[in-house]
Amino acid sequence: MKVLITLAAILFSHLGWAHGPTPQKAFESVEINQPVDKVWNAVKNFGEVAKWNPALSKSESEGGNKQGEKRTLTFSNGQQLVEELDAYDDQAHEYNYRLARDNVKALPVSSYSAVVKVSPSGQGSKIEWKSRLYRGDTGNFPSDELNDEAALKAMQAFFRSGLDQLKKSLESGG
Image (tube, rainbow, N blue to C red; front, side, top):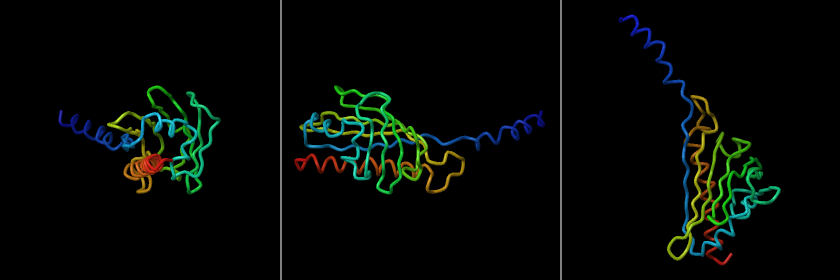
């Protein structure tokens, strides 16, 4: 019996090491002293995120806000990635999208899905931007540049830059 227990312990001890990355969750929000419709009009066009997120030098799409629409984001460092629209609800002021083609030099993530939502808050609006993501290196021993912390930090910084710019622009009459 001791031999069986020892053998089982040896055979199954490696399973704890073989797990992959766990999903991380990024969440950022901002309150904007403007009506929901005005805030939604600023963010609703899936292909125009570069108009309000200074982390990007360009965003391109075929236009439209239909499921399956793809946009190519060009970051200020020249690196690109592609995202795909999964759901769009103009009345609920919300859209969902995911990473379609990764580039860890643009963002140190291998996969993500995200939601942008505008809702009423007090006399103004609130934008929530959240994501479920995986680090850039999905192996068991990622480098510091591609680990969970780096992925989460980069995604939060990307969200924050856009939200801060929207607040500044919309509250100053832009």
